[in-house]
Image (cartoon, rainbow, N blue to C red; front, side, top):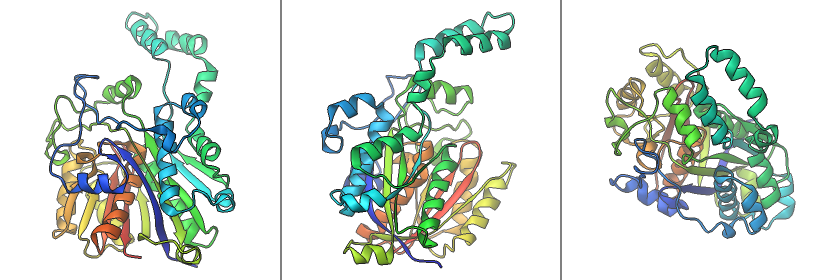
Length: 375
């Protein structure tokens, strides 16, 4: 069985604002996205917009017990349910499955800072680190920040209580969340599923982690494909959720199908020269992309893989309009693929696109490509 899988609801939040129209406007604009270059200087970030959380998270007690990344995700999930017309359908939501792609939550910055400072002068760094991790970390803090709590909070706030699953693993997690969700509906295992993720970039801990790997861009904003040999990504606070249904299920409840999610494919290469190009070409054929009018790239901006992706896409889709998501919302790691898929569905539904390809090339590992067409 290979049933058509359609998108019936979208929930989007980023520095561009909230909702489909704000993001389509940002996608069409040539202006730089809203960027904060001062708070975490020299590292720029694309901050979340001002949000009236009560619109999707009515209880202040729920808002208080969530950190920013969870509030963003729960809010975007609510937007998607609203857009799909199921926000008040208790019976449907009780059976609705959920797939989330997200990283962990915030850390104890004071402890992290003390450990990093102490490591500089430790005579035995390994022993020092083990001792501090055993004695200084609070297990309750860690347990409160597990990524599957985003799924739990969506269940609590929105009443989505079917089976849930959480993917971790940076960009490839978002690809696999979509791949599994699409496959389960297409195969007939389930009729509907909510899939997406969230990311908060305005956190010292994530900036430290990525700077330790040499992944962050510095200074002012520059377009993703123009970051050159220095490269680097600019993290963005964002969240995206999509309501996926079988075409028959959507039609049966009178829902509008925005687009059809045809296929999602993933890969993992050794990242040797030419590896990204070869992977993209294979995945392109695997999902059946023909002549897209739009290509939404999740390219990070890191060298040399970003230039390799740009050149490959130029060969594969020379007539398509190529746009880097990082030039619209920043880089959201796990959220890159779901956000790309959501924007692609919006282009099909609102701008009449005939075929949209989305890429998600991880900054360290993992490649993904997906295809959306009219429903």
